[in-house]
Amino acid sequence: MAWIDQHCHLPSGVEGRRLADEARAAGVERLITVGTGVEGSSEMIALARGLDGVWATAGVHPHDAKTGIDGLEELLASPEVVAVGECGLDFHYDHSPRRAQVDMFARQIGLAHRHHLPLMIHSRSAWPETFEVLDREGVPERLVFHCFTGGTAELEQCLARGALVSFSGIVTFSSADELREAALMCPLERLLVETDSPYLAPVPHRGKPNRPALLPLVGAAVADVKGLPVEEVETMVWKTSSSFYGLDAV
View 1 (tube, rainbow, N blue to C red):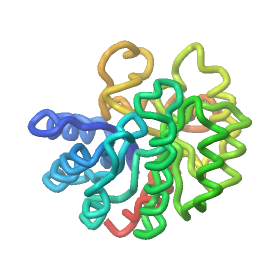
View 2: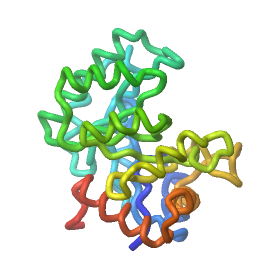
View 3: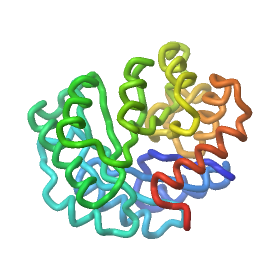
């Protein structure tokens, strides 16, 4: 077994290839590089097309909701695309009007239903509203909350909707006791790990650009919180991620 970074943002071109190679050398055999807008999603698809062990998502981030999602659905037919997203609500920064965020989120939930694809959610400072939109539009069969930053109450709400929950390098931060409580409570078979690179580098690299090769540090931190051997977490994360993204036969 090996690790799967279920959420990263690879740069296009030669640097993206270099980071993918570095990750593989570190035991991270598969990467999901995430689209945050229509143009960016197209770039991620092109990158994944040229790299072994790399797949893409296509979605519009809540920050970019004001730009709309025209052209997004056509990208979902690409064989490299394994999920819709990241999409959702971010009421912390409000880079797009909240009404636009809700509308674009709802429309992308519809795309996940229509194309039978997993949905990758970003939720920040908007937990009640995120759950409200999901419940109204219908929870997709496969759903993951990326870079989970809630506590045990939010975790329970995610699990109640059948979602997977993905933990990032934040789990290594000294200030993240509440998040570690959630990681402890989360059933191992419902848990994924990610870097969200180039953001949120885990300790001892905090403050530096993150990269997929650092994912094993996140996995080791989760294993420590749960009191499990790292190999057990690695094996389950590989199994769960592969099934979730339809990569079992790859």
